[in-house]
Each structure stands twice: as structure tokens, then as C-alpha cells.
Amino acid sequence: MNKKWIWVVAVVVVLGIVVAYFATGGFKSKEGKLVDDLVNSTEGTDKYMGLAKSVDVVYDVLKGEAELKYTIDEGLLEQGMLKMDVSFANKSQKLLKMVEIKLQLIDGSTVLFEHSLGFVDIKPGVTRESTFGPTDLTKLDGKAKKITLTLRKASEGTTVSPTPTPSATISLAKGSPGEVVAAFFEAIKEGRYTDAKEQLSVQSRIDYLAYLNEYDKKNYSSLEEALKARPENERPQKIEVVGEPVIDDAAKATVKCKIYLPSETRTWSFNLVKENGAWKLVMP
Image (cartoon, rainbow, N blue to C red):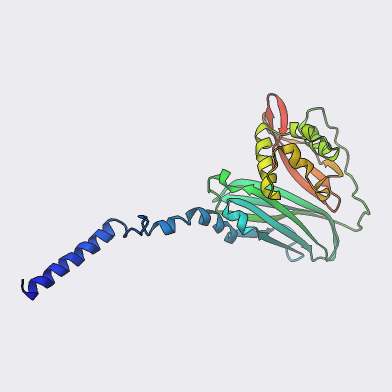
């Protein structure tokens, strides 16, 4: 065979290799996996890690008079759990009797999840801190594309009370949504952990145990054990239902409560569902 034909054969072989490469999507590695698998293996992580770069901080009130900051636990985020530490700084010269901060997980114009927390009696120059979550993002099927952190409400005062002043007492009917929330925290305060568990929905008993195991980095065998392990600064000294419950429909309700902890007072909204005709608390 002369040199001319040798070159022709060589060119044909090279072209065949190139065509085979693109037809199969790339040569396989030693283990038999396509090179593209390296990219695909990061999809699960990227699905959640992108949220850390998609946070919008919105000031509905106190723009220029307050500072809202956040940090996200990226280790938990990689696992599909959102834990966000937030701090609120009062930059004004006014005492703020109450501020409310709302967290929302959004897909386009659809709010997939939301939760609120609050602070009371914040003096000028004072910074308060709290935490949202951890929230299980896997339950949203990866649909959350954006996080919005909004300073929604604020009320001003002139003096700081030495102790929180309770608002008007709401009469709680037996078995009402507000009474169920109050009974849950009262049972924890008194060490009646089985009674506390009974106030939760069936699914929440499972979810809340998983949440506390993840949060504490423990392996509690029961929800009662996890509740018993709550530190003193997480045990409410008092709970106060603020306003009447909002009944969304026949089987869902929302109750806004003021929780008096040893070091701070928080305002939270709790969701409830009806199970076998009785209101049950949804946690976390």
C-alpha cells in the first residue's frame, strides 16, 4: 500500500472516532460512566444552593431606619434544608414596640411557603437575632426559585416596659385552635411531653421529631425525648394568643401568638388542621 492510501485510511479512522464520540455523548470513563455524569451529579446540590444567591431583602417599613441581615447554613442547604439566621438592627432614634419579619419561598408569582417571626421592645441601637427553620425544601419538589425576606410591620413606642405587657386576653374555647396551641406550649413548660405530642397532627409528630434530630444533630428515639431535651432558652414562660384565629376553611386555621421566652419575646403564626373533628397543631 502506497503512502497516499495510508493517509486516506488514517483520515477515515480519525473521522470515525470523532463521529462515534459525538454520537455517544462522549467517551466513557474507566468506570464506564459518561463524562457528562460529572455535571449531572451536581444537579441536586445546585438545585438548592442557587437559593443562597436569590435572596431579596424588602423593607415595607422603616427603610433607612433599620437594617435586616441574614446568613444561610450552606451545609444544610446542600442537603435540601433551609436554615436562615436573621438579625434586625434598630437604626432609628425611636423605641420599636414590635417588628414582624416574613420569610417566603417563591416560584415566579406563587408563594410556596411562608413563615413569620417578630421582636418586641427594641431600643435604639439594639440588634436582635433569631432563626427561620430548618425548613425541608425537598417537600417543595425543587420548585422554590427565590427567597424573600420582608420587614413587614413595625409599631413605635415612647418607653420600654420592664416586663412585656400582655394584650387583652382572648377567651379560648375548649378545643379551639388557640387553645390547642396554648396547650402544646403549656404542656412543654410543665414537662408533660406526651400531652404536648397529642396536640400535634399525626404527620407533624413524625416531621417534628425529624426536624429536632436534624437541628440538634442527635438521634432521639421519640418526640417526647426530643421535647424534654429543649434548652431553657427555648422553653416559653408564657404564651399569649393575639387576636382571633383565622379559619381558612373547614379544616385549616391560623393562630397568631406571642411567645415569652427567657431572653426575648417572639410573635409567631401557627397553622392547624382538623383531624377526626379536632384541631391539631402543624409543626415545625
